[in-house]
Structures are given as structure tokens and as C-alpha cells.
Amino acid sequence: MREAGVTVVTVGVFSWARLEPRPGERDFGWLDRVLDLLHAGGIGVFLATPTASPPPWLGHRWPETLPVDEAGHRLLYGARNQFCPSAPVYRERALALVRDLADRYAAHPALAAWHVGNELGPTCHCDATAGHFRRWLRDRYGSLDALNDAWGTAFWSQRYGDWEEVLPPRLAPYVRNPAQRLDFRRFTSDALLEHYLAERAVLRRLAPGVPVTTNFISLSPQVDQWTWAGEEDLVSVDLYPDPEDPGAPAAGALGCDAARSLGGGRPWALMEQAPSAVNWRRRNLAKRPGQMRLWSLQAVARGADAVCFFQWRASRAGAEKFHSGMLPHAGADTRVHREVRALGADLARLGTLAGSRVDARVAILLDWQSWWAVELEAHPRQDLALLDLVAAWYRPLWEAGIAADLAHPAGDLSGYDLVLAPNLYLAGAATAASLEAYVHAGGHLAVGFFSGVVDECDRVHAGGCPGPLRPLLGLRVEEFLPLAGGETLRCASDRLGAFTGSLWAEHVRAEGAEVIATVSGGDLDGLPVVLRNFHGDGSAWYVGTRPDEPGLDALLREVCAGAGVRPAVAGLPPGVEAVRRGDVLFLLNHGERPVDVALEGPCVDLLSGARLDGAVALARFGAAALRPR
Ligand code: GLA
Image (cartoon, rainbow, N blue to C red; front, side, top):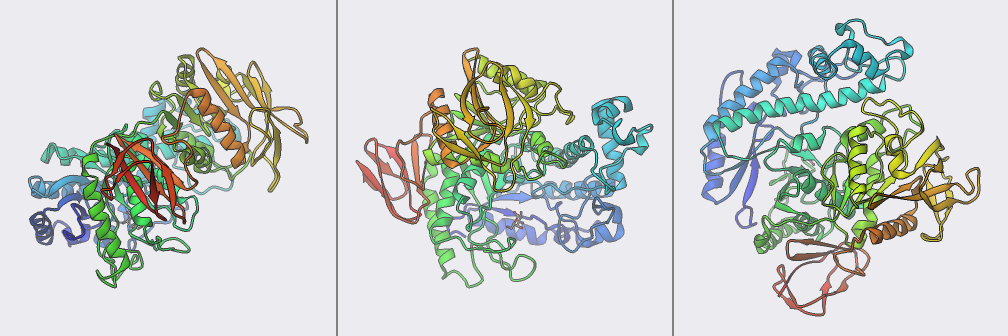
């Protein structure tokens, strides 16, 4: 590890059965040795609480700690993550072990941070969960009448007359109540958070001042990462872009930007990435030579102060034996391990960047609650995937070298020149007021189709969408008209040029907004599809379809220009990512071919040590970290 430049490791994830081999017993000897050895080698530890994977004895003796799926099946031990956060025995046992762990290691010199659980997110539908869900609902709604109203239970005779009748959404003959399902997602996120907070309370009490984190699956819908991140001292994420996906570099960048934004711009930790291949996709492609370094540097460029991996040594047994490790089965004399060592040296050269920030003038709105709601069933189309829409709008920014944060719609947007909302299906009064105030004060906003459709209870806004955003956007949608498979919408615009839309169309009526593009041909011929409304000192755009790539490029060029947003570097060659962190400009070549990028002035490449002027040459998968001199 020392030779590879490793300075911090995560230890103890999923180690419950090792630490507590039988109920109430403790075996810390092995962990003492590991922590002491690491410390002696100058390596710090993110010490994990082992509670994400209880040992078989817990489920065997107390089956009520095991999670139950929607169909009422209890999921057994034999894999991992088999726990119900609402089960009292699970919580007691988990907290007792966390207490002893914290007691033992609070003052250990290797301890750098606590890592609670792992990718917390499992869902349970058991009876204890039902009771917990009812308590959560009572808190939220106060009365059964208010719950009935919020869930629209007049429909299909779903009215509840007694709290005991209220259940988590379980398997049922037909489409289940969407507001119930949405609330259950909120509840599940909160129930897990409650457990995280209980662990955190123990850790903070016994080890005051040691930062606490839990690793998110990057941009995963499991929990509301905004709420959770507010309870972390350090945001950490696991990021696994697919080497087979040509969109992986942009997807990785988006994941990094999300991690940074969740922490309000603070440096974050890449807790896990694969040294090369994973083993859980249908096809598990290796990272190409140079790609692991490039994607690691991408994380640093986008604000990470730690770049870690799953896993150090490739395991020889168990479910993940074909997952890559920093030290492969074939040993240290391997391509992957050589690249790991080279990365260690690179990261040491970037030490002066620690703590510095990325300044983004653009925010992309992402609200987990709206995400959950838009992907519920029985919608105009079933295949709307929020992240696809977000990724589509992110791509042109990424290609142009325009840094973007992710933001919550009801958060403080005043620092941004431009705010993009690829989709905001759920928009209640708080979101509408926030966006209105932002634009009124001179901000620029662009909103995608099927937005402003429902309130917090998933009830449709009367009067047509975008509901409470109508005055701001200056338009009304009369009808949703999803497109048939393969069907496209031809669109014409003097400003944007001709483009096509896919997936979605709408019958839009301008109510004050200026029409920027119209549909040409078909039933919607001549109707608006892109509009812009001036409001207060700012402007608000609306896009009623999913434009093709040239269409989105043109649209975002126009929107960015109107908002005065400029790229980090003008005229980037295709495939080159540019992002500025502090005073350092990162140039990352994701392309297969070497390229030259023109420089604005004399600088030094922190990675190579070269003093440069005029241009920098980037090899295939090459990178430069340029500081002006
Ligand atoms: C997740 C887990 C790890 C490991 C990796 C494999 O991120 O946290 O324990 O299973 O996936 O990619």
C-alpha cells in the first residue's frame, strides 16, 4: 500500500460476523492488528460500522430483523443487506456493536473518519415497518382525514377508517395508490436516516470531532440524498461508470458534480470506484489502459479530496471474486497494479489542491421527491427515466467545458447565472416560489416537458401544467402527446435551426411567452415547442419535447449565451473535458486520439512538471492539471 501511495483505507464494512461471532461476544483482536499496522505504515482509516450486513445468527434467531418484500416474502441471509431498519432487535444489536466499536477505537491514531453502514437503501414491507410507517404518516398528516385527502382515497374505495388499516404498499391486484407509494419512498428514506442518525449519535458521543460519512450510490433513487447529505460531515459516493458506455465520461462527471453539490461545494470523497472491471453487469468490461487514472483525475478535478477504490486485494472467494482489485489475483506485476501505483504518484503531485473548490455558474435541478414521483406507474408513458433527461441536458454543458452544480429547486439559487430543470414533474408552492423569486431577481431558467404537473401529494394541478409555474413560464399545456416508438417531432426555429424531438410532445399554448421554435407538420403543426418568457429581470425557457443532440446543443448555446455563461476553455476538441478547480485547469482527454489544446498563457502541468506555453499535448486518455505561472 505504501508503495502505491495509499494514504487512507476503508476498513470493517460488512464485518459484523467477524466482530460479533456469537450474540454478545466481541472479537476486536484482528481489527486492532489491522488498524495498528495501517497506522504504523502512515495510513489513515475510514472505519466502517459493520451494520449493513448482519451475521446469520441475527436472522436465524430473530427472523423479524430480516426484510420482507412487497409480496410478503422474507428475504434471508446468505447475501448481504438483509435487515429491516424498523426492527427493534436489529436496531438494538446494531447500536450496541457500534457503541463498543466507537469505545474501542475513538482515540485510535489511525481513525480519520467514521463510515456508517454501506450504501444504505434497502426497503422493507414487514409489520414493524407498517407500524413505523403509520407513525411517520401521523406525524406528517396529523389526522386520518388529512391522509385520505392527500392520498385521494375517494378513488376506488380506498378510504381508511382506522390507522391500523394503513399499510406499506404491498402486492395488490392492480395499480396501487401513487401518493401512498410516494410517501412510502419518503418514509423509507427517513427510516433509514433515523437509523443512520442513531449510529451517528453514538459515534459523536464517544468520538467527538471525528467526521461521519456514509457512502451514497452515486445518483441513486434509494434515499433522498439532499436530506441525508445535510447530516454528513463529509459527503462520500461510490461511482461505477460503465466502460462499455460511450457516455461514461459525462456520466462520471455528473456523479462527481452531484457529490460536490450535495456537500454544498465542500470537497468530497470518492469512496469507491473499480480499479478496472466490476462483476455485476451483464458484460463487465475492463477499464482501458489509462482510463482508471483519467476517471480518478476527473473526480479530483470536480472537487474530490479522496480517491478510493473497492477493493484493495481482489478476493479469491465469494460473490465478488471477479471484481477487480488494486492488487489483482495475478499479483503486483500487472497492468492494473502498475496503474494503481502511478495514480498514487499523480495524486501526491496534486496535494496542493486539497480543500480548493470548483466554481459553477450553472445549476441543474434535481429533487429526489420529484424523481420518485415521475417514475411512478400509470403515467402518459412508462419509460420516462429522470436521469436520462438530466444526462441529456448535462452532455452539452460537459462537452463545452461549462461547470454545473446540482441544486434543489427550493434551495438558494441566487448564486447561479443559469438554472436548468430538465424535468420537475412534482412542483409545489415552495418550488414555484423559489423559481419565481430566482428569475424575478435576474436569473435565467430553462424547464423541460412534463413539469409542474403535480403537487407534493402527486395530485394534478388543476388548470393545466406547468401548474404553479405557469405565470413564470408564460404558457399552458393543454394535452400530453407522447410519441410512438421511433416517431419524431419535426421542429423549426429561426434561432435554433431545425431539429427533431423524440419521446414526447405537448399541445402548448403561449400565454405571454415568446415562441422560439414551433412544430412543423403533423397534428401539432405550427404550435409552440420552445418558448421564452421574460419575467422580472430574468428569463424562463420551456422545452416541450426531447430535442435531438444538435437541437439541445443549439438550445443550450442560446440559453447559456443569454445568461452570460462561458466555458472554462473556448473551442475544446471533442472528447476533451475541461474543468477548473481553484486556480488549476484540468484538461482530460477521453478520446482515443492524441490532441493539442491551445493555452491562454504560460502554465505548469502539476502532473508532468512540464512548463508550458502555447499549447498542451494530451495523449489518448491523457490529462493535464495546469496552474498559471
Ligand atoms: C458496492 C459496494 C461494495 C462492492 C461494490 C462492487 O459499491 O459498496 O461493497 O460490492 O459495490 O462494485
